[in-house]
Length: 210
Image 1 (tube, rainbow, N blue to C red):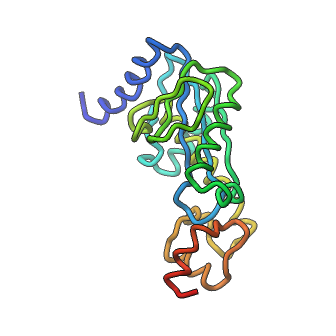
Image 2 (image 1 turned 120 degrees about the vertical axis):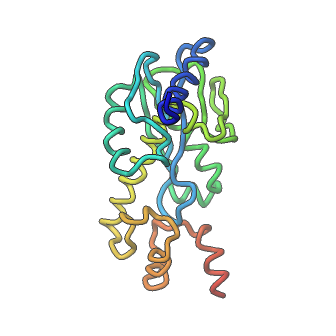
């Protein structure tokens, strides 16, 4: 079997093994912990056991175009899905890790179908009311987590396009809030906007002696 197909099959085999003990599982992932601006997003997805979505993979390994193609397929064919977020204000009040975990809890709690078990990308438990396993690099191991990663990423990207409409001078649609050279140049020229995370800019300003 070609390596690409083997990895692809392993995503579904991973979930199938978990379903032997927990029939209804949800995958959970977040997007947007690293950028300088915007809310942090999370998604929870429950896939039908028999469903195979061609091309599904870790969102980081997919092009933006492919993620946008897969997102509606996931939403249409999943047994249940929910996308949630934590605001810039919550990021500043709680810190980015706790805000991401909060977004994860909101996503799971928003599912219309109650899962037996949650597979969470990463190594931090979000404090769910159901049994949970943390899976480091889970979006490359579990189809359910991969599906959640696509929904979280595309939802956050959509929110950054909205921010671009509101604050066009920063180029949010292009860099999605990450600390690119162009983004820092825009901050230097215009100063931060309400969508920026002050705690994320602190070290930058310290380096500049501000």
